[in-house]
Image (cartoon, rainbow, N blue to C red):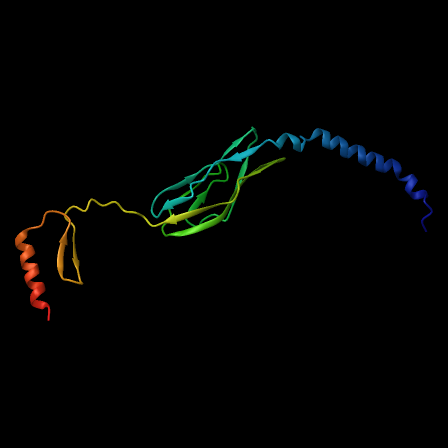
Length: 164
């Protein structure tokens, strides 16, 4: 049965517990010191198939050793938890969205806004020198550079012989 006396007798215990909490909070760095830490950088939004992609965020206002983490990392990419660097060479087209990079340490949490990477088709740059293409629609020879007129005549003659 509760008679109210137990509460008053335990008051010194509560005071000691509250004093201990205040002491622990005073010894630990307050969260306000970490409020100014920022993670910044603009990751490239596009990369071509077969090309190197690389992004490393920068952090300011801290000398603490940070640990980086990532959510929704593209399968073709690698990520460093020590530097926050995301890099890799994509092999196929696609869109990778909701990528989120965070930096943490005791009393520190910073994050970039979620971003997306679009992997586009490679725009190969060939010189075109000496390459040929035979069009199936009209059986004509098309060449980008240096053809022999005699060869052209023979191919056109064969194409006309085989047409109905």
